[in-house]
Image (cartoon, rainbow, N blue to C red; front, side):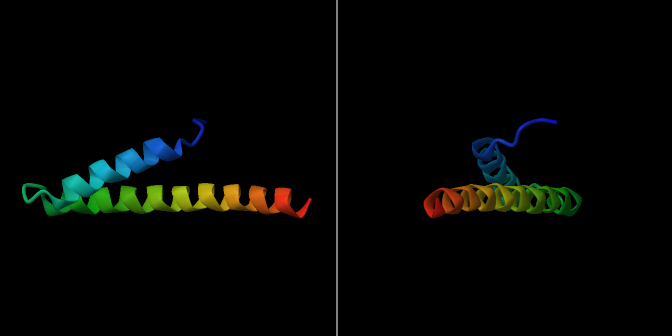
Length: 61
């Protein structure tokens, strides 16, 4: 399993946003890009929550 790369995910989200906003992009592709975006956003949230929990544990110690 590949380690999650937050910056890579943000870069991919930027690319997906550009493709979604492109008038030449068809509806089937937009649906696919939106689904991938939602998955990446959830992965980013999970990653950030993990960092926050780690910091909170460190602060509590």
